[in-house]
Each structure stands twice: as structure tokens, then as C-alpha cells.
Image (cartoon, rainbow, N blue to C red; front, top):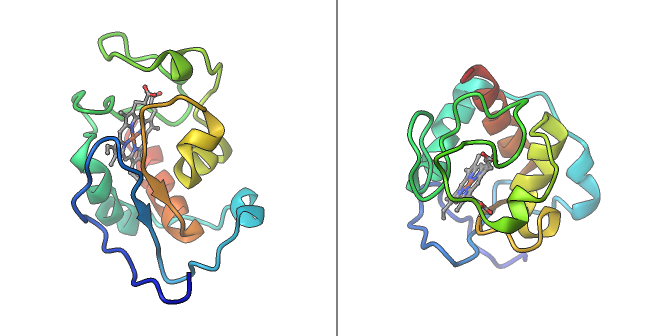
Length: 135
Ligand code: HEC
């Protein structure tokens, strides 16, 4: 990892390709995924631009709309075509689950069609804090 350049937020993303975004602390390990630092929703709004290649708060796009996502059951937007894997996941999007999802969607829900990861724990926390405000 050491030689890797930081991936810029907002980098072009192509559906079907795993895009690994590395923040300052890309030494963050899988062991650390459970620890969620306090999130900054204002910074999270900026970081959310990376999600907007596929998502928006109010409309379905490549991915489902995000309004009210924190606290709702996974795959519960009626007019969005989820993968069977996410539909059958039985998950609820609380902060801990979202943190695991953003760290590695395919590890949490094998067979999901979201391929996008955020390595940096603080960035995940900031995005989750922003999503929490989009009730
Ligand atoms: C390259 C496209 C892409 C990007 C970028 C992307 N997602 Fe997704 N996302 C998807 C797809 C596709 C799904 C549907 C997954 C499925 O049905 O298996 C999804 C599903 C989700 C879900 C589940 C919602 C629900 O209704 O159950 C959440 C939460 C989510 N994404 C959050 C994010 C966040 C936050 C970001 C930015 C950090 C992001 N995604 C970036 C494509 C993307």
C-alpha cells in the first residue's frame, strides 16, 4: 500500500469495478472497522459527492435513493431493483452496519451489486453523519 497515491474523491467510477478510496490513513486495517469515530456531517456532505456517481438523496439512479436510509431496512425502496443478495440480507442500516458496508459491501453482503469502498474510517463516519441528517 505504501507507494499508492491517494485516490481522489470524485474520481470517475465505473459500475462493476471496485474502486478503493484511500484517505490519509490508509493503514486503517480491517480490524479497525468496528471503531467509528465521531462524524462531521458538513465534511460528509463533500465526501458524499463520490457517492453521487450512482446515488442521490431523493431519486433512484444506478443505486437507490438515500433519504431516510439511516434506520431503514436494507433493500426497502419499492421502486428500485435491488440485487437478490441485498434483498435477502435482513440488514438494517444502523451506523455500525453502514460502516461495515462502506468499508467493503461485498464482504458484508456477498453478491451485492455495489462495488465501492471507503478505506478511511473518518471519511466513513463523516458520510454516515451526513446521511443521518437526510431524514
Ligand atoms: C459505482 C456505483 C456506486 C457508488 C459510487 C456508490 N454506490 Fe451505493 N449502491 C450502488 C448500488 C448498485 C446499490 C444497490 C446494491 C444491491 O442492490 O446489491 C447501492 C446500494 C447502497 C446502499 C443500500 C441502500 C438500501 O436502500 O438498502 C447504501 C446504504 C449505499 N449504497 C451507500 C452508498 C454510499 C454512502 C456511497 C458513497 C460513499 C455509495 N453507496 C457509492 C452503487 C453505488
